[in-house]
Image (cartoon, rainbow, N blue to C red; front, side):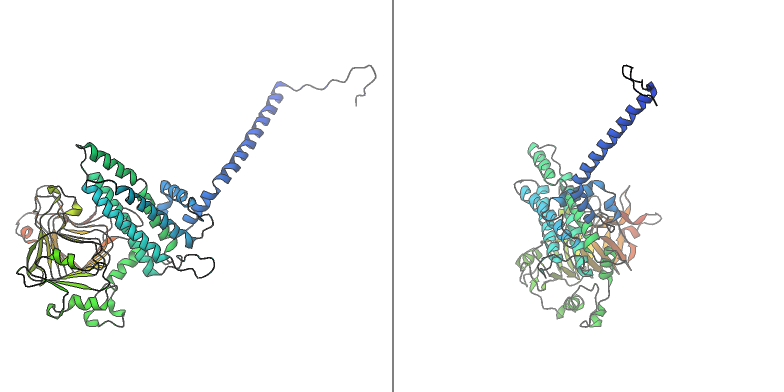
Length: 508
């Protein structure tokens, strides 16, 4: 060991080489970078903690894969939920109605803003569709929210029973369908030659920004968190209930059993009773021997939001009119003297500057609609494009022993739950289409003669979202050529049972 002596120089320390000094500096730099990264990571983690908490509520292990793979929807959903009062502390039972309420307010805002825009038929379509979507969202919130049973005042949705879940899935699917109809109508609107109409169209599209994504997220959240557990998907449950036998109802006379099970026993009896045994509320007769001479006047005279069945008897004859049964006309029933005897005829088509939605000979938006023993026909002709005979968007609709005749887009099963039995439907292109949960049972589907370069497609289902509880079920039906096609000898005409008119179309 070296000792320091007075007056002697200090012992020299060994000098580090250049390589060793550089290694130390690199080590210091690396330690600094790691420290900064840890600090930044901690700050970011704290910043996004609330969003992650919301996402964990939205997603969990039960969220459909389709939602997880649509990152922009999930981000939008999480961002929306963090802005809702109380969302950070909410459980699944509270999160579902909070989400639906948030979407309902956005629909209401878009509707309020759109009322200031006037002029085009496309805007009028959007006003009608957004109003209907808002009503269904409000109904959905009421259905899954119960009165507080304790001091915490929470809403119960996790234990929603199967019937309520089916209702809400139907309504949320329809709300998204109504948005799609509004958006499609705007996109199809020709505003190129009018500056004001271009401005109005652009403004309306701005009001709709992200609205479709919010509606899709609400549907996905309810399906993940608001529906009861079980191995049967909700859309399958809905179709099974459409086809379910009514004989399990102890109060039902099995001689007049009529699926689906949500058809009340009294309505089943009306559907199969002899016409002479039915006491109508109004009578339509072309010769004046009734309460009204046309169907439109009788519909106008019917009460609004009726909780009781309102029967309109339409005597034999050809009624040339376009009939619209709006959402306020609930539980309405049209009874004819037989398909081919009582006939409602229209001839509007897209070629006449109408949107598909407005070409219908008979358009039904009212809930609980029923019709029997009538023909609804669009006679626009084979050379014209889309021309709807019957359009139905009201929930729990039943059509029995009727004929629906047209060429392109004959039966527009637009939205919600519909049941057709012992009916004849004829057309050539997209004969049955739309985004309803529709069942055709024991029906005859007839393919008509095509023009050159056309092909027969019987169904064209319009499902756009993986969580839509919609589809077309063709059950025990027959596919036959119409007389004009049957008369063509020696020529083969290909007829396709179905196609998806949208990305996720579903027909069974």
